[in-house]
Image 1: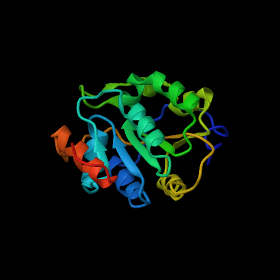
Image 2: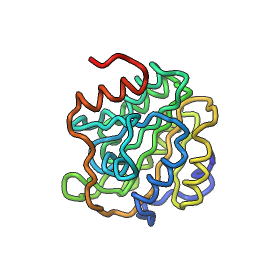
Image 3: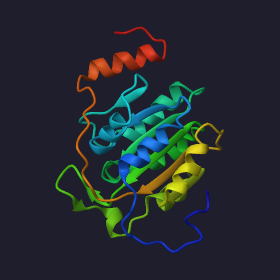
Image 4: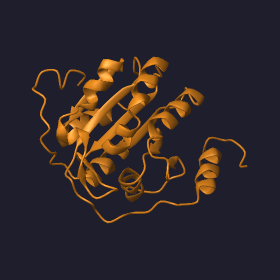
Length: 206
């Protein structure tokens, strides 16, 4: 799967997968991974698949998901950390890919749900819809693995690797339909989300 994109020409053709199906299928195979969600639709997608104490939803922290995931991966080296974010959110945090690559966490996966639009601000075409390839950017930065997934079979193959040891950080882009399914709103109380996440990890609640 590492060389998925290297053997086919790059296009910015829109995806055909339903985002909720992708996230639901993926989370069935999370194998205890801690999940950090990006602002907006990725949080709704993860919550729609089932609210859990080991989901860390970000509200109003545009561009923060990947770096929160990095900090968590460094603090919890025995656990796998999965960041689920969108193309717009990751584009805002472009420099985080370089920071993650330099830090070289072996337990961090970043999954970008890419509908090639800014879904939270009116569905304007994003940079990925104009040809920017986040998987290639991650590979150039030094990620151990990076690829673009376009079929559910490829999503399933990625899911199977979530429990496997990695040589460094990995980033996978999943091309999905540009759609806005009904919002499934996670808890908005950031203190509550933080406290239950800490409790899940065995830390005292503050």
